[in-house]
Amino acid sequence: MFLVGSVVLIFLAIALVAILTKATPTEKSSDVRARATSKQALTVQSTVALVDEAKGTIQVENLQFTDKSRVGKAQNLGSWIVTAPIGFNFASVSPGMNVVIGVDSQTFQVTTHTLTALTMVLAK
Picture 1 (spheres, helix red, strand yellow):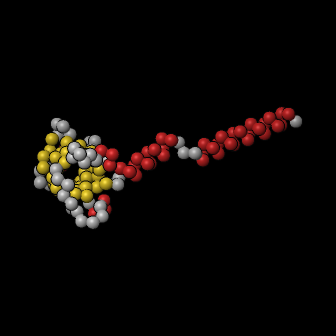
Picture 2 (cartoon, rainbow, N blue to C red):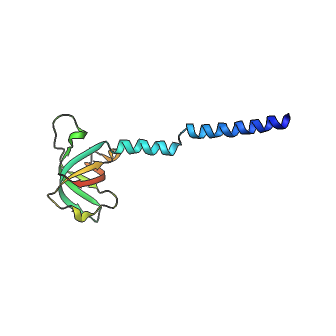
């Protein structure tokens, strides 16, 4: 009887661990989802003024939030320094081109007019 009770307790413990493992998300995976949704919230459009491939930055002028990132009328936020996304092809942009930038909202610094781009594509 003691042997059967021990085996049953072992199976219950295994089942409980399996249930708890599936029921609670890991800290890392939930953190990644939270960061991914917050980073995609902002998009801006602007005109390229200067490309500095050596520094990995692009200076833009007439920065404005896109229609999906603002309520109300568009406002010119001036000139900004944009750190290009990883692997960005600097030959794809030149001064005078209009671009749409997906912004890492945590790097959107109003006081220094700097931001880091997650994406950068030509405006339509």
